[in-house]
Length: 167
Image (cartoon, rainbow, N blue to C red; front, side, top):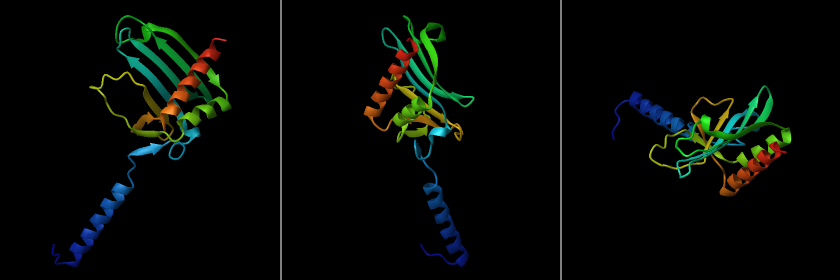
């Protein structure tokens, strides 16, 4: 390509620089522990919602309210799908200690958060995991654990919290 004028050269360089900076400065995913800190987390949902026979619904939620940290558990049961709030058979909340919250964060660390997507054709029951934090602008919320082992450890941790609520 032959460029005749200095202005065209400068414009081409400027356009290339903008393109490079635009692509390099736009993150497609965020990492928990680096981009999202423990003190920034406000809400985390972990939900299974299956249309199997019988249908299955299980939700764990970790959230902050008025500078306190909480765990919420909900189970829905019934013979129809979708299961609604009217089908809740077990639920409860528990205030967490700082150590509990730190352990929760240990399972999330190094996990990735990407832009939320619709999965209308998957038929997958989950888990559906969403992370919200103070600087979230309703763009990045869909969470994935760093490993399958961390996810399974997280689920075991949640079961222990549920058990401690019934003691």
